[in-house]
Length: 69
Length: 327
Image (tube, rainbow over all chains, first blue to last red; front, top):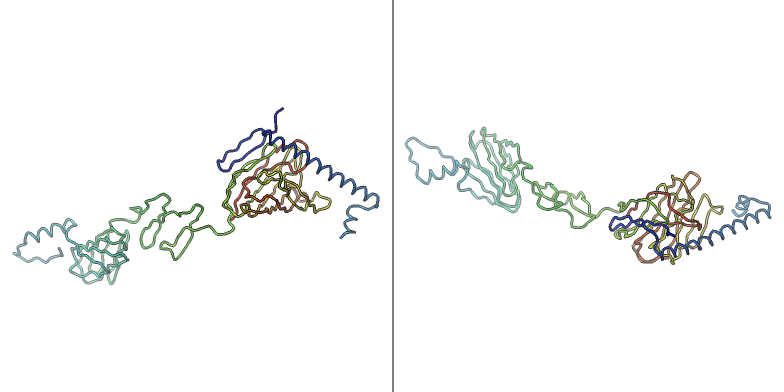
């Protein structure tokens, strides 16, 4: 399976190279994927919890913001 | 030999004939002058040779010469010699200022009127000698050597001999270092010039296949954390903070063209944490602005633009960048 293509613009030479990720870069990209997925899941969980809390309190986000202002 | 008044029956000596011949051929011994001088009647038909390291003048007055008289004037000194109209009128199509090794003939059309025929007409001989020289003027045509330091610019300076000098550009200038386009899963700008105070990246029409935000990673450092906060039109809480190896440059997702933004990294060559400020907008209601502090302490030599969040396969659809160095 081919790895993703990345672009490198070297200002010392002015050269622009499009090439496949190296093994190390690909491994880092996978790690980034995992981290991003965790952050995404956390954000979604937070949003869901917030929505549930608003529903329980019977107020909207705008009303909650007003209470805190 | 000065102009003579011959009489009937006069016999000329061989020396007189030789001198007259030399004068007629614009040669002969010159009357050496080392300071500013006012022509006298006896100078008619002779050569005046000025030599002085500083500027001098040769003054021309009326009532001393007759129509048809000539005076050959040369300047062999470093200082410019100026033919100056005293009480006479002196016209020229060239220059009345003789730089070193220039010469000319003062030809009287009347006792109080003369024309100076400058041998080297203005612009006929270039003073330029070296790569980068500029043709300027002080008291005569002068070369201005190119500045010794790359990046210096030409500046007006009334105290300089030519009124010009090379000096460092004033503060606040922007220098375009690179332009390019985004492509692939990430786009890296590497080997960034280290001679500026800050760097600014201006981004236009950036988009990607999955509509995620775009982040930037300094020096491709995947371990240094970034504390950041931003205001986003798309965030329900408006203010967000967190820590992520990739700082958020582009909080608003985009899959279409029309997204503009800019990213400023302060003191990017200094050792220590880096301050990053950004803002971007796609429309009146889709925008993000924020700041971050990166734990990267080394000088920033490269910027890696990549997906800021989400785990789906990400590829830039397009977009362009211009990198500026800021003094």
